[in-house]
Image (cartoon, rainbow, N blue to C red; front, side, top):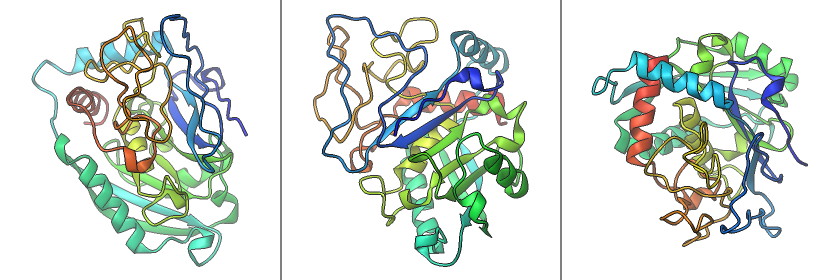
Length: 305
């Protein structure tokens, strides 16, 4: 099933990324025209479950506005460079037992450990401030942008703009998860947060995406990061690229763990397949770049401080 979600369906400042399984990558507005670069790589047919997604990213104009806002509000050298982010887990289920999404506290603890290990080098850490459990069969199968999502978040969300709320459910549409960007909080505070397929948590059943890195990836978006393949082989175009200088450009998402892949042969550097903001398997992801760390600091300071 393909997931095709376009920014024109959203209010201008409601920006998010939607990561799915078993679908081809869809990026509205992406223009890959380099003839000397490798053709976009398709998701491997052999993979029973694979990370891919329909991406709702800012338009060029929105990106420029976001970057200008950050420059206006974050003086060079004065960004917050880390801190403890209070985190609430909202477990939405349709009954008791893991099969019904009622994940045990041990899985949440493991997920928090994975988050903290992934972000350890950035100065940011996450403290589990509370867990809620809600039995609601309708919310359990919420889809992106649905009234079920809005209702669940309105009822469950806690804290302010610097508080991370994570919702787990058996989300529809073959999705692994989605997240809102920092800029969205101003106009849509109730929508802020990360939604995860419950089986992507450590020891879940969504192999090869069951080591907890879907949460790491989505929290990266919540902190202000784009995908490493955003903009394809045109990182210098207006609004193109992930706006991080030390993540080599890649023409398309990487799947599985293709070591040595270089999809933008005219640009130095192999694809950043081990970066948490690519689409490789959980076992392949293991790093954020220095530039991504700097971007998260600035985005948090401008929008979540």
